[in-house]
Amino acid sequence: MTDLNSRYGMNPPHSEVVDACHHIEPRNVLDMGCSNGRNALYLSQLGFNVTAVDHNAGAIQSLQSIVAQENITNIDPRIYDINQARLDADYGLIICTVTLMFLAPDRVETVLADMQESTLPGGYNLIVCAMNTAAHPCPVHFLFTMKEGQLDAFYHGWEMIKYNEDLGTMHNGAQLQFATMLARKPV
Image (cartoon, rainbow, N blue to C red; front, side):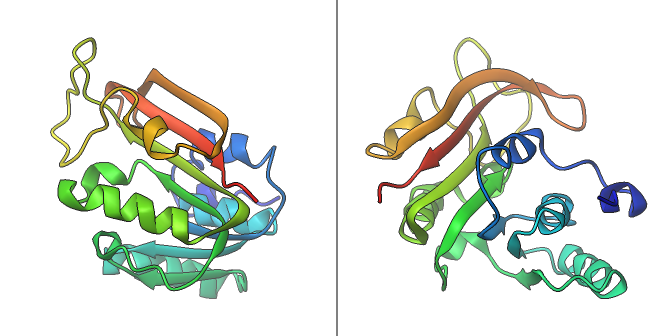
């Protein structure tokens, strides 16, 4: 597999996306908050059909340029404001890694509900979100951070493939606590 991320000067795909692909066979996937497309490119090379959305028009144009240059047929980059919570298709996998922190706090619950509704039965949601807890106050001023147990509670009734609230490091080196979840929707 060609490392398109390196070729275009991008960070590697998120480690949780890589790990999830060990459990999930290729299917239609939504990359919410795709930025420059680091996860979308990785998933497309594994055979996933990727809809990649972000509100940043420049990031989407950059990804569209890569898709055209590489003649990639299984990535559909689109400008989309995630705060709207109006997904118009259903997916077998929705990934939302390090994205919720940049949304309007009063929209996050609606966005998560929309993700759940737009996940096919037996499909998966992968979420990684910064936390702000008494033990580990968030050192970065994000618009939104998870509280202890908040993400787990929101996915009540889903099968938890993976769930933790561990310390981690952002790509810029900042150390903080993350809620990380891979959950499967009941069939």
